Length: 584
Image (cartoon, rainbow, N blue to C red; front, top):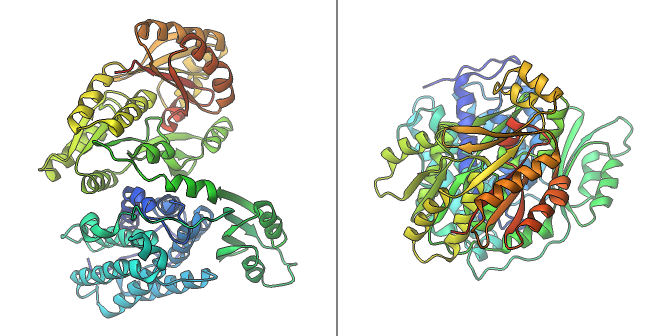
């Protein structure tokens, strides 16, 4: 491939460049957990992977124009790394041909450096510098194979970050943002140039720089990590960027039209908000508690007899996954014209928009992203147990077995078709991960999972049938009359899909039905695990249903989880579920 043809007007980008951007993002998604685990600069809050995944999603969305794409990057950008990357890509998405790569990379590099109030080498900024310089030295139009030399340069820059910043040198890791950009460009250029050599082996190339030194201790940081969007008026008396720079530290700004995207850290969240409202009209606001994030990050992963992998569609949150050391394979929620990774989707936004009539559906990760995720897990862990969503629900089992046949001669990835989904899958994965933290050998963990799989069950209570009709699972006419007659079906995940196991008409009948089924299934269980799940009805499930279950089963461990958003999208707001497992 010697030239890309991309329209110079506002039409959508052509398939080649779109596929390359998608591959770069998918590769970052696959390695996001690793990026989180080595995120010690500028603050050890363990969110670089998360922020890049959220910030770069617009690069794989179908947009009407590049103007819309740049605006989406501005609105989506999260965190220090995400905002700097978004600034770079606001220029890089303008690529029209291979001849333009150097110039466009330079434009992106310059924008990224200018966006940061106190820029530092030894971060992703150094990767952008090296990319622009290397593209100037190597003619990829005449010699596409020279991309290997470009990647060699970027690889060296990432390694050097471990020596450039004190925090990284002390912790013994490379910069998470720099590694994230290397991973992106490795995927991007692999597709763009149709490279035949495959991807760089991240775990091998950076093998001694991917684990934080256990003796390292993060310095404390109080306050909030803030992302805001301002719409500027014409009455401000001074340069808005100067005013913004005084609000906090770690400031990154990105202007586009009448809007300014702001990222900063501030001790006083309310005070920072007031100051920013004095600069422009606040149209978007997100904040994270740095102290809480850092406290969570300091909880280093415990030793496991066997690493556990499962699917995000199984009612497992990112927090659960970090705490238990579970690798999650993403699924996606399509809401209106946008698509969101399930583990990064705000449930209030999803259910609020669904109630307002916004169309919602689900999608699996691309085969490419799935394969990258399997590769990541198998390369970072000596052995992995993948508790896969049932083959009757998605193509994940087929995808992993195809990958395993071609790429796993040492049998490092053990795959179990759980024949489950939703909370049934989630509870199985959580219980197995807990067991793996105390088990002595991998085989006992596999045996535990197989035995637990035969025992775990789930009941899902649906509030409104018209959401099922929206997904094509029942007729719209049937849904209309069912809702009119207050018919509320109860379904349970089975090997070949969800099966209706009952019908109730109100909340009292729902909880009575659940208790009846639990008493039958758990009559001989000494201390079962019971997982209640909510959609937009946490208060109801927590304050009414949970108490009833605890009263009926005083010896059980009863805990609360959000229902898998994949399941929630199909079943709709108001749904809730209960998964249960006798102790194995």
